[in-house]
Image (cartoon, rainbow, N blue to C red):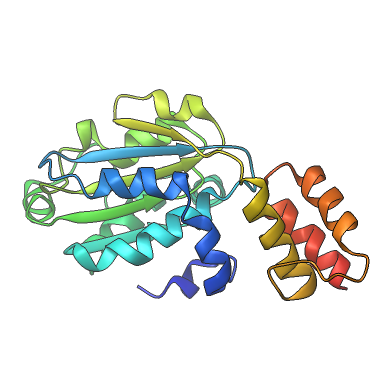
Amino acid sequence: MDLQKLNLDNTNETENSFVKDQNYAHIESLLRTQQREVLVIGVWGMGGIGKTTIAAAIFEEFSPKYEVSCFLANVREESSKHGVKYIFNKLLCELLQEDIHIDTPTIISSTIMSRLRHKKALIVLDDVNSSDLLDNVLGVGHDYLGVGSRVIVTTRDRHVLTCRAVDQILEVKEMNYHNSLKLFSLNAFNQIHPPENGFQELSKRAVAYAKGNPLALKVLGNRLRD
């Protein structure tokens, strides 16, 4: 799948290197485990902390290793506009590569269930805001997913992840000072270090203000550049 179609921020290769910190490494280690059971990983943190960027980087690296894959972006917004049934059908269409319509997410025909159970899938549900929505989309105990399938759920609300479907919960930590300064400088000066013509102190103040939030660092950097 072309990640440009996901309407995510265009993150260049240098910025992507900052994403691969301890947060990325933790999810990566869970995906590399050999357990056969379906594993649902919850990723939570404040808005702009980098949950979607991390999930997108993980998806880009690991999706070729799975038989089928699906990245559903902006689940909160899409479900608010179209309902849970729309989200579930969109997921099924992506996984089975055909037009499918299910009226009740918790009731799947035996034929579709059998087809899904024979596919090892990687699924990302980005920006989920309701545990009921998550339960409905993942079904009863995510029994319809194939052996070794992995699901990553990002959310701003940890309570969303307390439903029965989620196996592991990871809180995304703020970016450290070293990487924060690099990300800010990249967006402000188009280089990974602030120039020596008086911008060092300003850069330090901006990094302190952003408190390790990648989105805030990018916005502040872009405003300074402009």
